Image 1: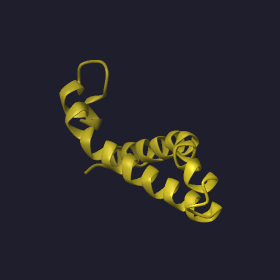
Image 2 (image 1 turned 90 degrees about the horizontal axis):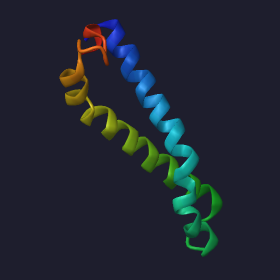
Image 3 (image 1 turned 30 degrees about the vertical axis):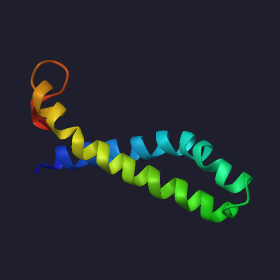
Image 4 (image 1 turned 120 degrees about the vertical axis):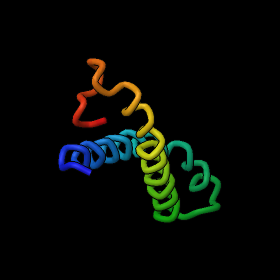
Length: 79
Protein backbone atom coordinates (compact mmCIF):
# COMPACT_ATOMS: atom_id res chain seq x y z
CA UNK A 1 0.00 0.00 0.00
CA UNK A 2 1.45 3.37 -0.97
CA UNK A 3 1.80 6.31 1.36
CA UNK A 4 -0.95 8.18 -0.49
CA UNK A 5 -3.35 5.26 -0.04
CA UNK A 6 -2.53 5.04 3.67
CA UNK A 7 -3.06 8.77 4.15
CA UNK A 8 -6.36 8.65 2.24
CA UNK A 9 -7.53 5.72 4.34
CA UNK A 10 -6.65 7.49 7.59
CA UNK A 11 -8.36 10.67 6.41
CA UNK A 12 -11.49 8.78 5.34
CA UNK A 13 -11.72 6.98 8.68
CA UNK A 14 -11.27 10.26 10.56
CA UNK A 15 -13.93 12.08 8.53
CA UNK A 16 -16.37 9.17 8.87
CA UNK A 17 -15.80 9.04 12.63
CA UNK A 18 -16.22 12.79 13.06
CA UNK A 19 -19.36 12.86 10.93
CA UNK A 20 -20.92 9.88 12.67
CA UNK A 21 -19.99 11.09 16.14
CA UNK A 22 -22.17 14.14 15.65
CA UNK A 23 -25.29 12.09 14.94
CA UNK A 24 -24.63 8.80 16.65
CA UNK A 25 -25.10 9.98 20.22
CA UNK A 26 -28.58 11.16 19.29
CA UNK A 27 -29.40 7.54 18.54
CA UNK A 28 -28.18 6.27 21.91
CA UNK A 29 -29.40 9.26 23.92
CA UNK A 30 -32.53 7.31 24.74
CA UNK A 31 -30.36 4.76 26.55
CA UNK A 32 -29.19 7.50 28.86
CA UNK A 33 -32.55 9.28 29.04
CA UNK A 34 -34.37 6.09 30.00
CA UNK A 35 -31.88 5.33 32.72
CA UNK A 36 -30.57 2.15 31.07
CA UNK A 37 -27.02 3.48 30.78
CA UNK A 38 -25.09 6.20 32.51
CA UNK A 39 -23.87 9.16 30.50
CA UNK A 40 -20.31 7.87 30.11
CA UNK A 41 -21.42 4.37 29.12
CA UNK A 42 -23.89 5.74 26.55
CA UNK A 43 -21.14 7.97 25.18
CA UNK A 44 -18.76 4.99 24.99
CA UNK A 45 -21.42 2.96 23.18
CA UNK A 46 -21.89 5.79 20.66
CA UNK A 47 -18.13 6.10 20.08
CA UNK A 48 -17.68 2.35 19.69
CA UNK A 49 -20.49 1.97 17.17
CA UNK A 50 -19.27 5.06 15.26
CA UNK A 51 -15.78 3.60 15.04
CA UNK A 52 -17.12 0.23 13.88
CA UNK A 53 -19.27 1.92 11.25
CA UNK A 54 -16.46 4.11 9.94
CA UNK A 55 -14.06 1.16 9.68
CA UNK A 56 -16.72 -0.90 7.94
CA UNK A 57 -17.42 1.91 5.48
CA UNK A 58 -13.71 2.32 4.77
CA UNK A 59 -13.37 -1.40 4.05
CA UNK A 60 -16.48 -1.56 1.90
CA UNK A 61 -15.55 1.52 -0.10
CA UNK A 62 -12.37 -0.07 -1.45
CA UNK A 63 -14.30 -1.55 -4.39
CA UNK A 64 -15.87 1.83 -5.19
CA UNK A 65 -12.51 3.56 -5.19
CA UNK A 66 -11.13 0.91 -7.55
CA UNK A 67 -14.16 1.18 -9.84
CA UNK A 68 -14.06 4.97 -10.12
CA UNK A 69 -10.26 5.23 -10.11
CA UNK A 70 -8.63 7.06 -13.00
CA UNK A 71 -11.98 8.28 -14.36
CA UNK A 72 -11.68 11.84 -13.11
CA UNK A 73 -13.41 11.13 -9.78
CA UNK A 74 -10.56 9.46 -7.93
CA UNK A 75 -6.90 9.74 -8.89
CA UNK A 76 -5.22 6.60 -10.18
CA UNK A 77 -2.76 6.67 -7.24
CA UNK A 78 -5.62 6.04 -4.81
CA UNK A 79 -7.16 3.13 -6.73
